[in-house]
Amino acid sequence: MHAHFAQPIQAAAAAAVAAAMAVSNTSSTSSTSEPHASTPIHHTATKTEWMEAIEQQRLERSTLNRLIINYLVTEGFKEAAEKFAEEAGISLSNVDLTSLDERLRIREAIESGRIQEAINLINTKAPELLDQNRQLAFHLKQQHLIELIRSNLIDEALTYAQIHLAEFAEEEIKMRQELEKTMALLVFDKPLESPYGYLMQISHRQQVANEINSALLIYQNDESESDLSMLVRMATYMQEKLDNKQLRYPKLVDIASGKLDDS
Image 1 (cartoon, helix red, strand yellow):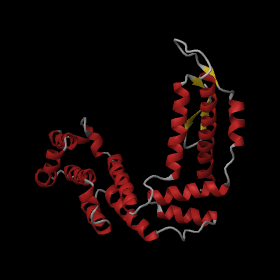
Image 2: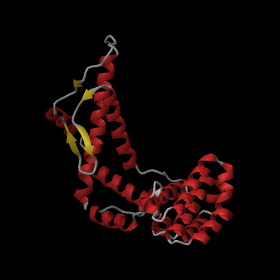
Image 3: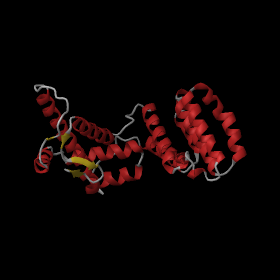
Image 4: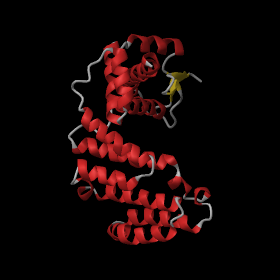
């Protein structure tokens, strides 16, 4: 488990640093050259040179371990965090395991389609959250409506939409459009195969669960995004900067494996 996490993380971290250096170098070069009608594609380095540059950006094992623990705790993976901490010899004494347990129960309820249970748990843990964040409340209730449609409880779904969701549609056009798409599922014999079938995918439950998890972290004054997620986004951003400069380089094409493409 330890090695499985470490390799791609180190690749992403090192690639972000190397890409940042390359962007900096090309920026300084371009600032002294005349503009052209079309920018030719340039190679920043061979794959061997790029890998040598990455290898120089070594990360301490302790840093990698902290990144992994931070990700697992932030995303609510308690058992995985405890197991990894045990393997890596890291103390979790500074982690609020009670809060982590509560977020985990809420995530599990949403991802299992038990939305009303999740709402009750949220109201217990963070009584003001759904009142303060109308979009969050809408997405939870929208997901409950989706679960009713999934269970073919048509009359109950219509009643629920009228009582609990109509007010949101009156407040904001985007919410009204989302509600219309959800209600359109009722028209199809096989809603999962309809143009709006993505709403019934398990990934949509996960999307709502992630949104709730981030909101709960902010509510309790914690970071809403893990350091690892930020690092991956940074690596992606730096590569986009290189792409925009029409540079060819060994691109990180698979974060999970740390695979580079030098085509």
